[in-house]
Length: 70
Image 1 (spheres, helix red, strand yellow):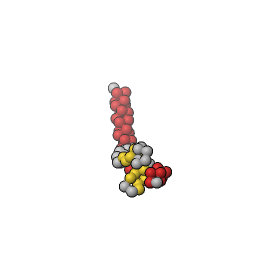
Image 2 (cartoon, rainbow, N blue to C red):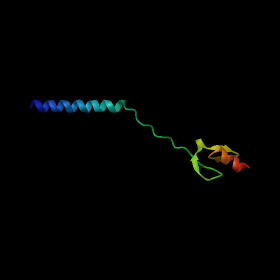
Image 3 (cartoon, rainbow, N blue to C red):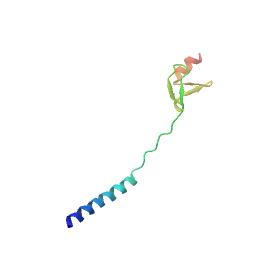
Image 4 (cartoon, rainbow, N blue to C red):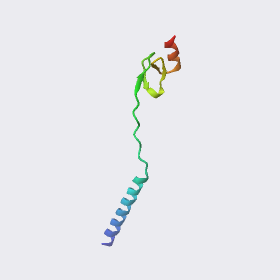
């Protein structure tokens, strides 16, 4: 009978430790979706924050912007 009580006490302790540990682990934040734009020169799609904008067009790199504007 004392062994059963001892095992129950250990199980309760493990449960409580696990519960405390889960509270301390930071939750992963979900990434915010960003609009995708298309390069006016080559057609590749990339996030709007990474694009280069010129004359109401988006480009994937400076070389494509310069080549398309010539």
